[in-house]
Amino acid sequence: MKRHVIYLDNAATTRTAPEAVEAMLPYFSEQYGNPSSIYSVGCAAKEAVIKARETIASTLGAKTNEIYFTGGGSEADNWALVGVAEAYAEKGKHIITSKIEHHAVLHTCQYLEKRGYEVTYLDVDENGIVKPEEVERAIRPDTILISVMFANNEIGTLQPVREIGEIAKRHKTLFHTDAVQAYGHVPIRVDELHIDLLSASGHKFHGPKGIGFLYLRAGVKMRAFLHGGQQERGRRAGTENVPGIVGLGRAAQLAFSRMEENGAREKELRDYLIGRMEKEVPYCRLNGDRERRLSNNVNFSFRFVEGESLLIMLDMKGICASSGSACTSGSLDPSHVLLAIGLPHEIAHGSLRLTVSAENTREEMDETVDAVKEIVAKLRDMSPLYEDFQKGKSAPERI
Ligand SMILES: *Cc1c(COP(=O)(O)O)cnc(C)c1O
Image (tube, rainbow, N blue to C red):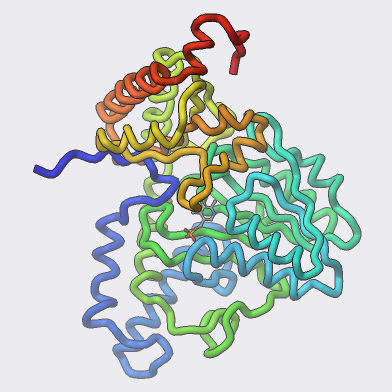
C-alpha cells in the first residue's frame, strides 16, 4: 500500500492542479504547432499563448504587452536585475535590495557587483520586514533599481511593497519585486503598488515547473535576455513553451478565482498549527511576523534541536517539510534569512518550515504536531546541551 504523504512544503513547490494539466495536454499532442508558423496548427498554439498572456495581465491590472514568459522565477529575477542594470548603466550603477531576498536575487546582485555595480543590502527588523524609511535613506543619485521581495519564502513575511513603490516613484527609481511566493496567493495591482517589474513562477501556485513570467512596465528600458528570434517582443528568444504557458495561465485563473476561499482555509490550518505548536512544544519560537504573513507559512525554531535531524525523522513519518539551513547546497550554513532577523547560529539551525496548501487537512496538522512533539523530545534527550540546560548549568534563555 502506498503510504500517505503529508505534504507541507508548498513554498518549495506545489502540486500541479489537475485542471492545469488537462489544459496543457492538447498542446503536447494534436496542437503541437509552433506559434510562429502561419498554418492552422501553429495558429491554435499562438492563440493559446495570447490567451494565457491576457489572463496573466488581467490578474495584475497590467497590459498584455507588459508580460514576458520566462523559464521560471529565477530567470525572471536574473533578467530583471541584469536587464535593468545594463540598460541604465549610464544613469548609475547602484542597486538597493534586502538581506532576505531569494538567492536568485542575491546571487545576481553578487554577479553584478563583480561587474562594477554597487549594491546596498538592507537590514530587516526582528520579524523580517524591510523598513521603508531605510529604503529611502539608501537612495542615491546613481540608484537605478530597488529590488525587494513581496513575501519571503522562508518566514512568509509580507513586505511594505506599496510604501517602497511610492518611494521609488518619488525618487524616479525603478522598483522590482520578486513576487514568486505572493503571486496567486495575495491580490497584486501593479499600478496601485507602483511596481515596475515583477517576477512570478508557475509551480508556486499549482502551475507547472519551468515556466514563469516577468511583468515589465511599458516604457521601462530593458536589455534582451536571450538573443535569437522575435519571441516575447524580441527580448526573450526561443520557441515558446506552449504547454507550460497554457498551464501557467490556467493555474493563474484558478488561483485568482479561489484566492479568498483558499487563503481562508490555509490561514485556518496555519493558525491551528501555530497554536498547537506553541502550546505543546516547549522552547519553540515562531519566526516571522504574526500578522503580516503569508496565509500558508509556518516557521519555527526549536532550541537544542538540529533541523536536519528533525527533517529526516519527519520524512520517516511521511511528512515533507523544509529547514532553515541550506542543506541542498551541500553547506550546513544556517539560513541567511534567519540570521538576518537576528537568530543566533545554533537556534537558526534548529528551524522548521511548514507551508500548507488548501489541499491539506486538520487531521494532517494534528499528525504533524504529534510527530514534531515526539521527535523534538527524542532529539533533546540525546542533546548534551539540553541535559546541561535541564540541570540548570546554563542560564535559561528565552527565545
Ligand atoms: C521559488 C522561488 C524563486 C525561484 O523560482 P523558480 O521558478 O523555482 O526558479 C524565486 N524567488 C522566490 C521568492 C521563490 O520562492
